[in-house]
Image (cartoon, rainbow, N blue to C red):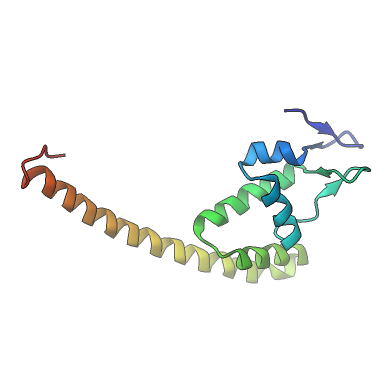
Length: 134
């Protein structure tokens, strides 16, 4: 992968195809994230080509974690808006993340309960049904 040096020479920049390769997101998804306001302003070259920074990559990593939590896209966009609005939104951002955290903990509990049921069934097939116990 080639890293494009910025005009100031202090920060590397990545093309959309490089970011797609690094993140596993498609170029279409990256453009959509920018269009809906999920991405902060992405720098452009003099020819209009997107130039993603290390900070952009960090943000995309965070967004990926939010996606894994099951946070709705509208809430992710709201969070991004709050970040752009500045420090005075810190409490609202924290509240959004705390709500998401509670949802994740609830899902973990549900999954642990589901796993216990599966373990019981697997054990049943291993012992009662004449299979090999696990």
